Amino acid sequence: MELFESATYWQWWVLAVILIVLEVFSPGAFFLWMAISAGIVGLVMLLMPELGWEIQILVFALFSVISIVAWRLYLLKHPTESDQPRLNRRGEQYIDRIFTLSEPVVNGQGKIKVDDSIWKIRGDDCPAGSRVKVVGVDGVVLLVMVLQDS
Image (cartoon, rainbow, N blue to C red; front, top):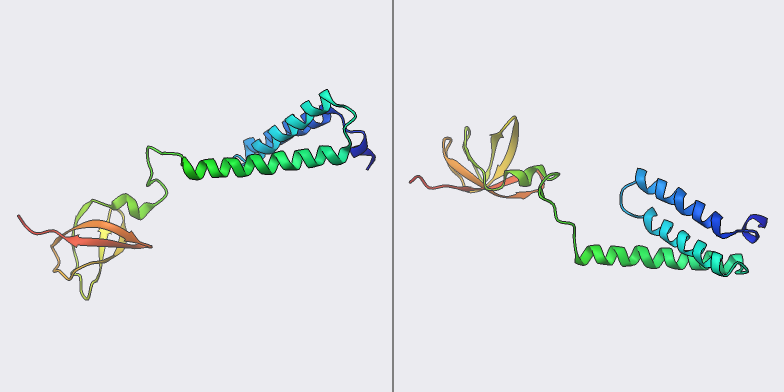
């Protein structure tokens, strides 16, 4: 309790630095907002050093929660765009690619060799040697459409 009662502005700033270091080693911009909140409490303590520890903790908690929630809401409305949106979605990387079947599609089920792996496919029945285009992904199954010979 004595630690809380004797807290000063610089202790809040040290906490802010520790939280920034934690942010460097963890993804998600979570500790960043808590660090900013600790910095704000340190600034408030610099201006009003007689502030009780209960109010300090309350201000820190309120700023932390408000800033984290506000950041999450902002991200929902403005998602981060990537130059490779399908990077960690392996199946989606094959959408719009065309393959030639080495085995027929029977009862809507089949397999194709894609690069160095075998994928299950679902689509219309067709014989081996048909050309198919990947039009979607359902879990680990590629959805294909048979291409008409031209």
